[in-house]
Length: 134
Image (tube, rainbow, N blue to C red):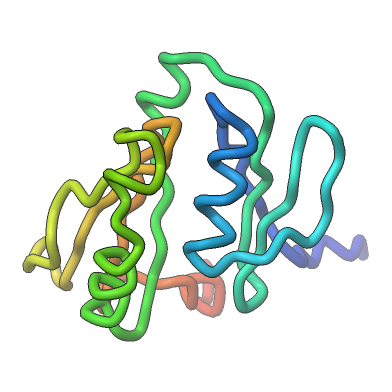
């Protein structure tokens, strides 16, 4: 039998200004684990993504990531403390404060390239992989 065990899945995220986006994600709390001239892997608590020094407007405008958290109010305060509008070229911003939506609490923000992040408390989570499939 083949060993098809998955260790991780990571999305690639576009950056219009690679240095600005790198600083944004570090300020958010991610650690730059691996870096090359054109990409960097950012991780936090074992989860992460690859930031690319590559930008296509349609890709950035349609890219979305979902961050499942234990305490959304703590994340809202953290994002507020970063003063996104003034700190990241006027592009990164909180789009929606925590609110009830589809079985949980959710908020949204976008990064300096316009990538949309959904932050969710409750609802479907990263534990989905532990479900039994039939």
